[in-house]
Image 1 (cartoon, rainbow, N blue to C red):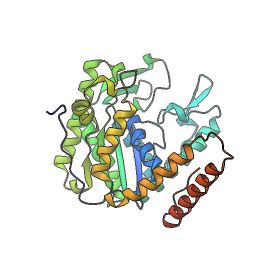
Image 2 (cartoon, one colour):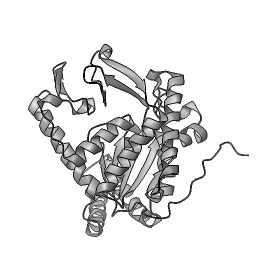
Image 3 (cartoon, rainbow, N blue to C red):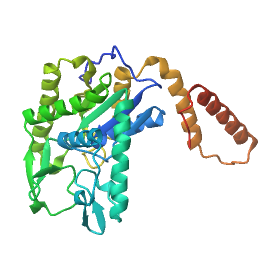
Image 4 (cartoon, rainbow, N blue to C red):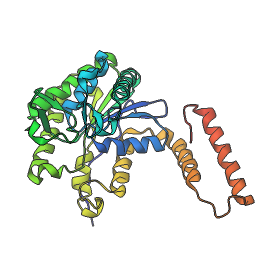
Length: 320
C-alpha cells in the first residue's frame, strides 16, 4: 500500500557536492535550513551575506552590486526606530551606528564578490513573487524595515519579469564564474500574510518562471531545479510536517527535504566523512553526568583523535 506520492529524483550526473566544493546560498529563509545542514556537516559554504532575501529582484540586486563592486554611502541608509537600515538587506543587518552599518554592508559585498568567483555551486531559493516598491524612490526594496506601509506599493511580479530577473542573475554569476552550477529551488515556507490565494499565485509565478528559464536556456546543463516546494506539497502533505505557526516546515520536514537534496546533489563518496563529522558533532553536544569520570575523559580523548584525523585530511574543517 502506498501512502505517499513520491517526487521522482535522479542523481546529478556532474559537479556533485563534496568537501572540495564551495557553496553560496542566497534567498528565502529555507536557504538557511539547507545551509545549516551543509554547515553542520562542515561543507564549505556562505549563507545569505545580506540576510534573508525573499524575492528575485532583491537577489538580483545583491549579485549586481557585488559584481560591480558598489560602495554603500550615507545616501543608501536611513534611520528609524533607533537603528540604521538599508532597503537592500534584511533587518538583522541593521545597526545603531550609521558608520558600522555602511562598513558592514561594504564588507559583505566584498565577501560576496569573492565567493562568486570561488563557488562551485550557487543555490538560489525563491520565496515570493510579491514585492514592495518604495513610492519616493520608485525602487523595489528587499525589506521594508517596518517603515509605514503607506510609503510602498505592493506588486506581484509577472512570470516574464521573474524570468528576466533570473536570467540577469545567471548572466551576472556566469560572467565571473562560467563553470559554476546554479541550483534554483522554491521555498516551501508559506507567505500567508499575503493571503492564502495570493501565496499560491506567487509560488505558481516563481515555478513557472524558473521552468521557462530552464527550457529557454542554451546553458541549461549548468542550471538546475530542485523541487523543495513540490516535496513539501506532494510528499509531506500533512500539517504534522509544519511548525506550530503552520507556515514553516518542521525539523522533520527539513530533515526529509535535506535527505532528498543529499540524494540528488551530494557525492556518495563523502558519506564516510559525513558520518565522521556527525559523530564528532554529536560528541561535542554530549552532556556528561560526571565530566571528571575516567570514561568521559577517554571519550574526549577519542573524540579529539577523530578530530585530528579528519583535520589532517581536510584542513578547512574546524570544530568549535
